[in-house]
Image (cartoon, rainbow, N blue to C red; front, side, top):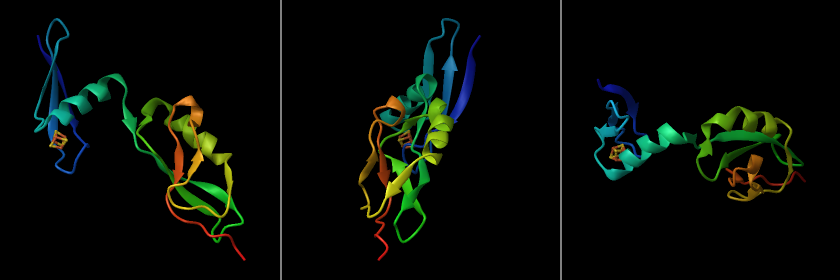
Length: 123
Ligand code: SF4
């Protein structure tokens, strides 16, 4: 008997519909991908699903009260709730430049949080 599950590859805008099939020996077959990256994406989704994360943190002394930030690499899906809780406790000081690393190795994942825009200091 063969089981299968479907997945949309989000690696590029083409968005191929992938089918992951398992045979009786749990061997995996991936179909529907139009390039090798789709197969790699499907395998990663099965073993270690990750997402790019965008959020905001408080910023002190800036022209706005909140600073948009993002991860610099896909973040483990299972730790996203912990990340969001942690970011609520974070406050950055202005000024900040887009791309600045604000938090290194967040939650010991090896991933950094970076500024998504410049934030000038208020005069
Ligand atoms: S399988 Fe390849 S072409 Fe299709 S969405 Fe993924 S990266 Fe793009």
